[in-house]
Amino acid sequence: MPISPLPPQLVNQIAAGEVVERPASVVKELLENSLDAGAQSIQLDVEQGGVRRIRIRDDGSGIPRDELALALSRHATSKIASLEDLERVASLGFRGEALPSIASVSRLTLTSSAAASGSGWTIRGDGGDRFQAPEPAAHPPGTTVEVRDLFFNVPARRKFLRTERTEFGHLEEVVRRIALSRFAVAFELSHNRKPGLRLPAARDGDAQLARVAAICGEAFASQVVHLEHEGAGLRLHGWLGLPTYSRSQADLQYFYVNGRMVRDRLISHAVRQAYQDVLFHGRHPAFVLYLELDPALVDVNAHPAKHEVRFRESRLVHDFLFRSLHRVLAELRPGQATAPARLETPDGQVPSAGSGGAWGGYRGGAGAQSGLGLRVAEVMDAYGALHPAPADDARPGTEAPGEAAVPPLGYAVAQLHGVYILAQNADGLVLVDMHAAHERITYERLKLGYRGEGLKSQPLLVPARMNVSRREADLAETHAEAFTRFGFELDRSGPEQLQVRAVPTLLARADTESLVRDVLADLVAHGESRRVEDAVNALLATLACHGSVRANRQLTIPEMNALLRDMEATDRSGQCNHGRPTWVQLSMGQLDKLFLRGK
Image (cartoon, rainbow, N blue to C red):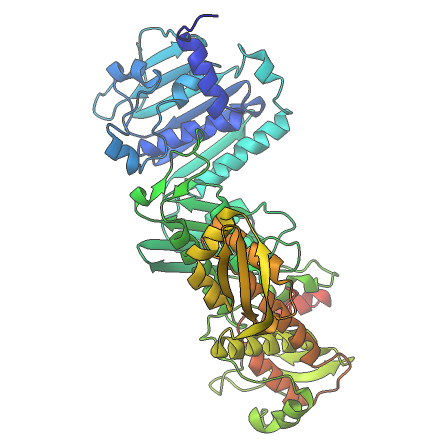
């Protein structure tokens, strides 16, 4: 077959295969166009999951009559005009592919009125590469795009669509994700002429959190900490789910780069690393986060559907994200609620302990460490002197208004079966798993002490030789300083051979070769590695577990109060070393419901 140019219609349908996967893809592209046009209110009406009909109306700047046909032409856009513009893309859509691609696989009607024109015009297509001339139409300032019979002329693609309910679920999730990226814009969504999602414009912090609650759920919004951090030309802000609000799947993770929702392995890795020390095995964090940086430092043209981005300084971004999130999680403290309590206990049901400290709250702290070490008996004996208890240990927390405030975790009143501490604070009843809490305290003290000494090296009597690829050997040379910081002494002894002369002292019995290879793999993928620190932390966690107060150990009231005070001053004290909660709070209202008081 001779080489020949493809027909325009076929070119558009090939492009549609990249950007139009299902009705949700159409909605994403059209919503992004509306936002780029400066819309402040967007209405979406869909039928049969979006397969039969999608109509999106906005109050944006509109399209002049003589540009309507161009808007449906391939590679025609108002958003970039030069390579410099492409390297600093600030708009959501810019390829000029969406409208012509959608028009090639549907019956499309585009109606618009430019803000200053005072009149509207409409243009229609029927799945071909030709469109009727624009006709006058009554329309307020803004644009309406109506897409009917998606994939009517590509039956093979239509067969891949799922049920109406499934397709609408994907479509609604796209609307939710985009609504979280533009709080100042109002969104309305209806399905089969039935009202659905209604999100008014949210211009202040409370209204924005209310939108987060409407999209992510009240439970998430009541168990978040707000984050604001800037540095190195980067800004990270948003809401971070508390470790106690983890998920069995990564289904509540929203991340935006310069207002664009993205899925990125580098970002996911940095977030997982930040949560690693506080999440239970197999659980996933929940978050709504926004990263802002110079558009020139991020390539948004890496994927036809613009789901992925590439950072020009990926190591800087990864380090910034990890350190910002890690610091916030480390400084969580019992005591101050991060959002108004929205959780309610059903009548007659005992609240789940799995909610952990979320029923209370957290406050930021300076990360001071105090209290329990490995010698449990010695420290416990001295607790009474180190942490004076209130005057009347049997009746704590009863100060009259104006007297000293009750500490966040209150004062101990009893111990239950040698396992739990019962304490009374200003809100009600606090229950503490004393072994889990002491384990975290001990672990954090060990980490602090070890970091103070640094990663000491232990020379090997006989250097270990490793056969590696030439690429791995090159990496070891390039990152020699990093390996030294990790406690390794590493030399290249041949084109494809390394020689390990020293290892971190605490990991002297570890599988040296596997650890070095894992570090090299991390350096290739992310520009840095935490393998050594993670391995050291795992060993310290084991030591902390064995060195913590055991179950069935009877504590005195002063000892219990000392443990509560140490929890209030310890990093990540809401979870033990394995990610399980260390304490729960039952408010007086929740207790009243359990006993049907006030009925």
